[in-house]
Amino acid sequence: MPSYVLSCCSTADVTREWLEEHDIAYLYFNYYLNGEMCKDDFGATNSPAELYAKMLAGAEAKTSQISAGDYMAHFEKYLAAGTDVLHVTLSSGISGTYNSACAARDQLAEKYPDRKVYVIDSLAASAGYGLLMERLAGLRDTGMGIDELAAWAEEHKHEVQHWFFSSDLTFFVRGGRISKAAGLVGGMLKICPVMDVEPDGSLAVKEKIRTKAKAIGRVVEKMAELAEGGRDYSGKCFISQSECLDDAQEVARRIEETFPKLDGKVEIFPIGATIGVHTGPGTVATFFWGQRRE
Image 1: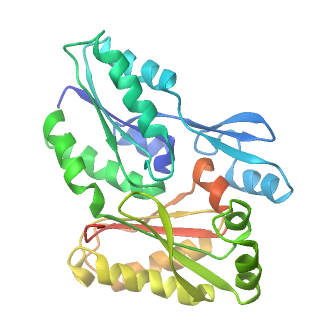
Image 2 (image 1 turned 90 degrees about the vertical axis):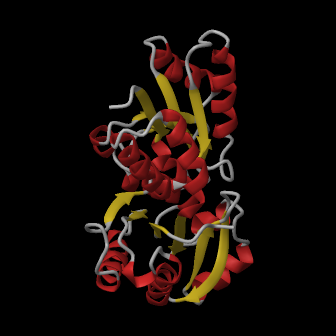
């Protein structure tokens, strides 16, 4: 096995067990709930249901990126043991954490001149970031070295497609991503915005679909249009959901029906607190390998 550590943040929105099973190190993001700092620790501090209930009851929720100091402590425990690190961050399009990780890398370079720390901006979010980590772990396990794996990640990270819809616009309005007027009209007309992650790693509303059922169908259509091989797609598919498991399972059912060559079942994960603070409940996000985002 290659002698380096593959690492990410809890915002990859898989589970602790999944990361440990894939031998991926991780750091926790933080968030604030009514001014109290909490860890984005896969729902251990606040389960998704508890978090959204508190937010809907009026709790003020804010996210907080990982500091350069936290990154330094994380990297140094491996560097001091003579092990190189390849760390992949949450998209710079939605967080400043990539800059913090780069600052930590640069500060440690003088102390550990013979060691390597690669910091990769995933330009991905939630389980799309997790899907990228799954592929990187697989390549590492085939014996790919750290230099080659870092180059592969930079070359292919834009091929992770992200397609979201939300049936509850409350927190998109509260966070300023959708205007109050648009949110009011959208709620009355049962509009579900369909969003993607852009080439720069930011979130963008692409279509406004009336009714959740049609939004589910549209996401499956986008996958057929954009996935590697179209309906012959043979890669993995991950879904993230925020307290709307039934909707996520319906998307998964349709995907498995439409893409018979899929690599295993669709894997469904809960959206973590950092992303969930911005989306609130009612969001389903689908991730797959496909056409390059550009």
